[in-house]
Image (cartoon, rainbow, N blue to C red; front, side, top):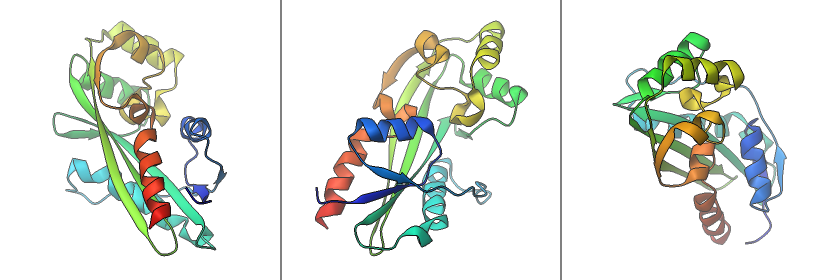
Length: 192
């Protein structure tokens, strides 16, 4: 892979750590944006729409052909509904009750944007929760931080360790970065 300077458009410490574990060097470039999306946008198009929006918001940081913006967005889809980051404890409770005892999909979309080319892709992982009692939901919300996580949970925290019975697909995609796919797409990008 030829030398590419990655400009990471994410403030997620989990994503930053995963990029480091992949052996990739990056520079953190982040800008808060309005993460709203058009009403009626199909649930499977929300994460790609927002990943691309995030890349466009910081595209003025691109100065040379060897620089590449990497942005992501993760959403949780269950029964045809999209669940993003909860607004507060009541919203987190509502989301976790909706996921309790069900299989949902975690979709992470990634945008790789350079001066001359762009790649947009998504990865989906299926996750099955055991039934969550009201006491368990309250415990998780009180002792962990569901507010910056799509679907109001992190697979690597208490709820994932104790209440996920099955996963089909990439674990790291649920953490927030489909590392295997990013690696492959970076190889393709550098060859283009």
